[in-house]
Amino acid sequence: MTDWTRLRHAYGRADDVPGMLDRLVPDEEAEVWTELSSAICHQGTVYSASFAALPRLTEVAREWAPADRLWPLSLAGRIVAGARQDHGLGDVRAAHAAEITELLRLAEETLAAVGGEVRESDFLDLLQSILAFENVPVWSERLLTLAHGEFELYCADCDECMCVILDGPRFSTYVSGVEPESEVVPVAPDDLEPLGRRLYLAAEAAGRPKVMARLLHLFGTTACPECGREFQVAAEVAAEVAA
Image 1: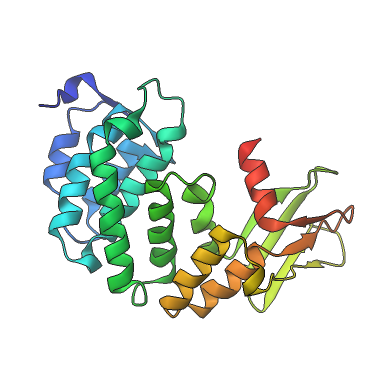
Image 2 (image 1 turned 90 degrees about the horizontal axis):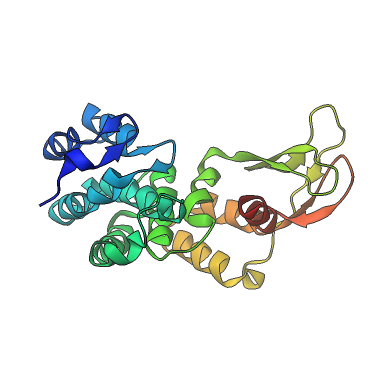
């Protein structure tokens, strides 16, 4: 049995976590989800209590219908992605291999069942969770940025802060005060790298043309409006995460 008094979350001792887990309901608007995620996955940071919550999150995801599983799968995905942090707990993926395997199965089942029906952000969050359960670097934490339509990158040459917009019809990169913007040129579907193609085909199967377009541009090319250096957007994101 878990001794929650010996575990920690964002606000200290984790002996209040079992009560939160007992109050979980298949309603994303329920306040308990905000309380729980804030405590055990605060702004992406994970704690000893985070991994101790995985068995219960797996259990509720298994019990609930596919359309109701999105939030437990999302929270579990963010926790598992956080296993790369230096939390001093050893190999938490190995310690929770059974739960992660089951979470992956449930997430794939959910994607097939409701992938074309949920909000775009939930669809991308579900794909991101699948990548987390599979231990795919970078995109198990950054794929959901596509849902926002834009994100910032720093040019590796001139260190200028660039804003990359992947929200059609405007696919461009701009720097404040610099004209003109640089176009983001999409890659052809057949030229997608394996991960990009896999994500693209998942979006195509779910009838998600907007996500498909964003993925083609994410794995496409652009240039820094300040210094003119050309780069592949996805590779630049990966390099910045690794830095």
